[in-house]
Image 1 (cartoon, chains in turn yellow, brown, cyan):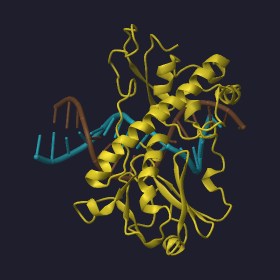
Image 2 (tube, protein in one colour):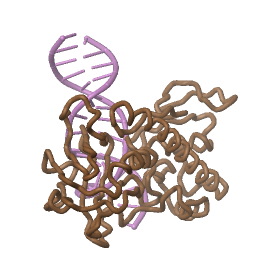
Image 3 (cartoon, helix red, strand yellow):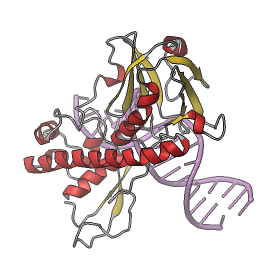
Image 4 (cartoon, chains in turn yellow, orange, brown):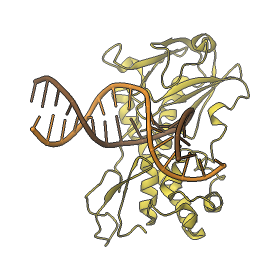
Amino acid sequence: MPELPEVETIKNGLMPAMQGQCFKHVQLNRENLRFAFSKNFTARLDGQKVEKLSRRAKFLLAELSSGEKLLMHLGMSGSFIIGNARAKQKEKHDHVIFEMSGGARIIYNDPRRFGFMEILEKGEQGRLANLGPEPLSNHFSGAVLAHRLANKKSPIKTALLDQRLVAGLGNIYVLEALFAVGISPKRPACDLSYEECAKLATEIKQVLQRAIRAGGSTLNDFAHADGNLGYFQHSFLVYGRKGEQCLQEKCGGKIIQIKQSGRSSFYCPKCQN
DNA sequence: CAAAGCTCCTGACCGC
DNA sequence: TGCGGTCAGGAGCTTT
């Protein structure tokens, strides 16, 4: 489940193979992922240079010499593999292969196919149009968060997953941030005080930054081993710890699991209120 | 409009 | 060992 930090790490791993290189050959092994590929997908990429590779929320963006953009989303099981190190020539669920002018063979593998790739025309926003602020940027802060939560009646957990409110958070890091600041995922978003919003915004940034740093070091190990730039399982303080002792000092509570809008939430009912 | 529910998909896991 | 059932989740879509 690549969230913002994993996508950032993957971007960094792809950077040397893609940025400044041209698409020499693009191969599709099926007609669609979650959505159909854009019309003439391979022809539109062929020969084009990737001027810049970047990330917006959980999207990877390759800005092309034509002014178009290749938009890539990894869904929850997508990964990129920088090819040659791989044992088998082709694995199950290899859906897209980019051969780059610099010699890299980049494979997109995605068992569940929740990911997708689309080409945006020059100036077109597409699925980026309604994204909220980047959480690590100056456009996101306690004040911004407080303002955006002001009239939200939904639980804070659900609100933070809404990409229009803030873009790039997923289930795991939302729960980790709420745990760290002692706020229950069930609290109505509009009930958070200004101080709580400030603490939460700061913690969100820290949780993401820590994960990016950890991903960077993991990436080095992975890339050398098998070229796989998939997401990495970090260790989490609350996510997935149902029934375990709360890891907050002197709390002594027990982590429970509930469902919110169909998604699992983990939290400590004793220290998160 | 907001909020909640449904849906896509496959692999992992569990109990028998 | 195999089999059926359940779960995981991003985000677009549908329903309320």
